[in-house]
Each structure stands twice: as structure tokens, then as C-alpha cells.
Image (tube, rainbow, N blue to C red; front, side, top):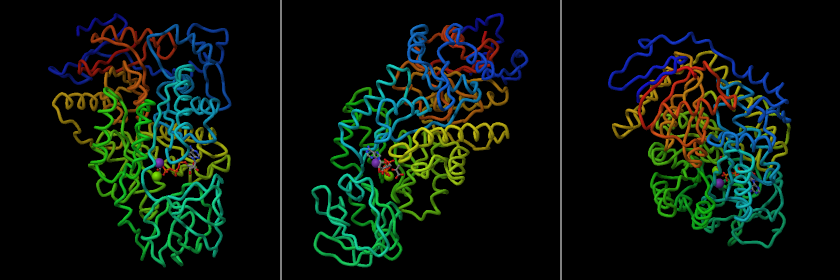
Length: 581
Ligand SMILES: Nc1ncnc2c1ncn2[C@@H]1O[C@H](COP(=O)(O)OP(=O)(O)OP(=O)(O)O)[C@@H](O)[C@H]1O
Ligand SMILES: CC(=O)C(=O)O
Ligand SMILES: [K+]
Ligand SMILES: [Mg+2]
């Protein structure tokens, strides 16, 4: 790896054998920090004449983001066919400048409000990194349509949206209300909860329950909570398969809402705990997900690491060389008991606050969230904070102050990703909700950097092999150097994505450009904090990789001469600091 430094570039190689402190290397040119954002914003504002490859991003959309018109995107892609970057990320780069691109990733649940091609495209343009489909709702044909529409969007319009399939899991929930959007339960009303199946629509004030042991297990006097307390009932009478309940807290019943029952102030779980985490229907859904090539499978109501290991071997056996990542949803008491082993076994985790809030007292949810986010970062697993982030936006076009504060806190905790549920699945303002997540993330991330609140989080060793340990130490050092030298970006060349995730774990001040040869690794990296994934074919020769990357990115106006960059690769295990020639 001879450093054939270009005359213009100060080029430092830090070899492992003879490590030198960054300050001991040849002097770097003064770090005149550029503001590529301003430069590019000006450029794009005036480049309708089409200055070279920059003409790809000239369209202000209603969200104020610059997007490529399809034809220009296609021609830009053809012009630099060796590097792929998501068009929405490229727009973010141009709008905000690359030091200020959004680091927090955004997951949107797709539902009836967003399953059309235009709505999906609007979400992709608005910054959706991952589209989630929830197998609790809709049938496989519906989900197939959504997954294929996302793939088409990626292929035809240049996005890199990943797909997450979320399993139904076998917790107790209500039926689908015979197609009604919701039902209202009023104080004092008597409702029947029954294990009978009904022809749609069910009789008035009657709710189907999916759990056969329900009528056996509840007792008169038990409290029945819908969606963790959105409505509350008391069991007054048992009549064979029917359970009569009086509404004690009025509320809205949504299709397939989760049910829990409580006795003497504790949740009743004996039989519930016997249900398998992955039901037969879930296995069929998983087969479906594998055959449709989803990027992530999120497992609902995980209880132990065992089920994650089982699923991972199942996926490996069903699809050799598959890149499907398994996300553990932390939403049950058992998952909290076995938290560390579950997260270690998984490829990532979700703080599923909806069901979690039905199983533990609500006031414990915030501290549990913080604990899970921290632990995931320690163990180098991406973590998603989910549910009710902007709940009021299901109906209203602006969030409450409290919701904005909640989103800010998740961003401040440096969670990898935030998720929309009902807001994007069936709300009235999916795009607005997404744009609130985007703008709050950007603002809080900027505030954090300006305040230089580098939290002194001591990162524990996560690697088992010596070679992985070297990678880990390189990433920690590179992130420290990046902050101290105020570099513009870290470039990482990675085949598996591992080195990119180790860098993301350090949460450096600058963005991380992650180059990988595989489209599926690239989509998977979309869930991780601060990573800007590119697809690029590269070789073992770092010198030529760098030169090629520089010229490709320069041609697209994404970097310019003089930008200060740290480059890493998982082939060479080296750190290089250089200015873009
Ligand atoms: N594919 C779909 N078809 C119809 N409605 C949907 C669909 N996906 C989501 N929804 C609606 O959006 C709401 C929120 O969706 P989401 O899947 O995030 O929530 P959830 O059902 O509470 O999640 P989970 O079951 O994983 O805990 C659902 O309650 C449902 O009403
Ligand atoms: C997302 C989810 O499953 C929950 O919050 O319960
Ligand atoms: K689910
Ligand atoms: Mg849930």
C-alpha cells in the first residue's frame, strides 16, 4: 500500500505496525472548512442550465427537498454507472451540505394511506430509509404489492429504501372489526369478547378474540386493557366462549388491537407465556418474506435468544448467502428479562413502546428505552425507537410539543432510527409526519454537534477475534481523529458492512460514506446512524479505490478538492488522512 500521494494532497498513512499520533504526521494544510452545502445550494439554485452532472438535483418538492426529476436521475446514473447513491440522500447532501446530512434513520410503516406508488415515492423523497410492512394487517397479496412497489421505486427512480417485514407474533389481540375502521366503547356499556368467529360484520358490541384459551383464562373481576389502556373493561360474566365485560374507561377500539388482562394489579401471563413467539402463520409469513427478498425481519414479542438463533439458522438454511437481518422487538416482560442475550443474538433491536407500555407501567418506558438504546450501541446493534412518536399527527397536521420533545429525546440518545406507525400507515398526514421527524432530527443533531456534547460513553469490546478487535480499535481511533481534526467525512470500504457499523457505533461528528459492493449490504446499512451507503465495485488497491471514488463523487458535485477525509477499509486495516486532490 505505497502511498503515492498526489502533489496536491497531504496524505498520511497510519500503519498499525508503527502507529503515529495524527499530530506527529506531516503537517496537514490548514483545515479551511468548506461549506459544501451553501456552495451546492447556490449551485443547484442556478443550475437549470445544467452544469455537468449536477443537473440531477434541481427540483424543489413541496417539502423543500431537492429531488431529481426521473429522466435526469436516469441520465446521471448512466453517466456515473460505477457508483450508486440513493437520490434522496444525494438531495439531503446538496441541501444540507455533507457535514450536516441527517444521521438518524427513518422507518415508515406502510398501510392503506401510503401503499400507492405515488405515496410511496413521496415517502422515499421525504427521507424514508426503511419501509415496514406489518403482517398483523392485510394479506400476503397486499404485502407483495407493497414490497414490489418499493423495489420498483428503487430500480426505476434511484432510491435505496430497504424493506422490513414485521411478524404478527402470537399475543392476544382482537379481530378486525369486520372491516370497520374503529369502534367506540362508552363508559358503562356491556361488550362481549368472544373466541367465536363471526361472519363480517360481527354483532353489535361484540369483539372477536384470537386466543382460544381466552374464555378459560380470564376470571370475573379481571381488568381487560385494549392497546395498553386506550380503553378498559371489567369482566362481569363468563358464558361459554363469550365473556361479558363492562367498559370502565371509554375509548376507541382499533382493528386487531392488542389485549392484556390484569388481576390484582398484575398482568396475567401464565397461558399467554406458553404461546410460541413464532406461530405457524408467522413461519409462512417468514417464507413469504424470504422469497420476496426483504432486508429485515422484525420478530414480535421475542422472549429469548433461542428463537432468534432458530430463525437465523432457518433463514440461512432456506436462502444461502442471504443478507436478511433479524431485528428483535423488545415489547414483553420476558424480553426485558433476557435483554442482553436477545440483543447479542440479533442483528438489531426495536424499542416497541406500544405493546411494551401495555406490559410494564408507562412511567418505566422512558428509562427502559434509554437502557435498550445504550445497550444496543455497546453491542454494536442498530436500534429503532418505535410507536406513538407523533401519534396526534394521525389526525392533525401539527405535532404536540410533547411529541416533538419525545422525538428529540430519541435523537439525543443517538438511536439509529425512528419509526412511524399509524402516522404513516393510516394517518391523514404521512408526509408531514415524516418531515417532522426529519427536521427535528436535523435540528437536534446540529445542536448536539454545536454544543460539543461528546458524551463520554466508554465503549466496551465487542469483538471476539483478534482481527475484529483491530477493526474495532481502528474505528474508535478514526472517529476520535475525525472529531479532533474536524474532517469532512470518513470513507469506509467494506465488503460485509461490519467496519461501517463499527464506525457508526462511535457516532462521529462527520458523516460516514460507506462503500460496499453489494446492493443488499447497502440497503441494510440504511438503518444505521450516520451511514451514507454507496454501492461501488472496488478492489484491494486502496490507492485506486480512493482515486476512483474521488473522481466519481467530484463529478457529481458531492465532494470537492480540499475536503478533508479519513479513509478506512476492512481489507487493509489502515487509517489514511488526506485532502481530496
Ligand atoms: N397493512 C395494513 N392494513 C390496514 N391497516 C394497517 C396496515 N398496517 C397498519 N395499519 C393500521 O395502522 C395502525 C398502526 O400500524 P402498526 O402496524 O405500526 O401498529 P400496531 O398494529 O400497533 O403494531 P404491532 O402489531 O406490531 O404492535 C394499525 O393499528 C392499523 O390500524
Ligand atoms: C411497534 C410495535 O410492535 C409496538 O410498539 O408494539
Ligand atoms: K407486528
Ligand atoms: Mg407490538
